[in-house]
Length: 381
Ligand SMILES: [Zn+2]
Image (cartoon, rainbow, N blue to C red):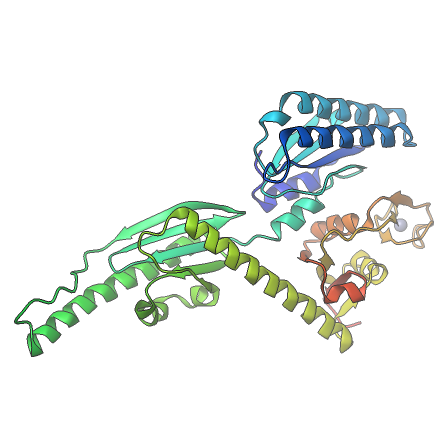
């Protein structure tokens, strides 16, 4: 299955393997940087790392048996499916005891790792998804218009439009009044074409809800076309593609991805800045894993902001599911807490359960000085 929607993350996050543990296996399969042989070696190494860890894992027999079967299944995949894998990243999710198995191709290379946990490890997916926006690229010419969707590094044609606009041919004898009349006539046609294009863009927006609109047209058309766009679209108009009537799909994609990267970097910087500003004025924000978990436990978090790849250990209460950094016993339930390999991952799960937005900032950033994690709160502290 190809990874391309938040619904897939949701579904994996919701998976419950009854009382069993799950296996999540992530591998960098990007062939632009490594040979097939190197990928096969990394696969083997990661699998044997999993076997070593599993051998000393102190869990019930049923849990262990299921995990052993997971690794066997992954090994079988390595023998049969790996050499034909074309995507830049591979994710395998398994819980054999509950008959669960999923192969997922990723648009970008993940960090190689294997995780045994109560829930499937979806954080690399949520972090990857957050790197992309749904973009509509409109290529507008004086007679034609073409719309492309760009999402997760891929481009597809959405729609096209062709209008009859007379060309501006000046012939001898067209002077003065007559010439002006013809010009006005052409302008009216052009205006109609732009109007149709603007309406269609809005229709496509209603159907596909893209985040950003990128436009390619001649400089002289910009001032005529932009005012015709619906206010929702004006807000989303974020990028300008070089205008060229015969621009190829590849070039549109390449330019769009570059603009996306820059916009995304600016957006992350602004997000980190907004959080720091809120923290410094003592407003509705907290920082550091301990404080963030405390607020997350009590449903006070509005959105979670974390540094990509930040991970640290912690504990979780098996009864109330509160998350802690170092509590050995839950202060509320008085039961012994369970050790968790990556409490940041658990916090992402908890946030998703509570419909709290999770946003990522690529390090280095201002967030680094504030414990690499923060949260905007619903209420003032
Ligand atoms: Zn508890």
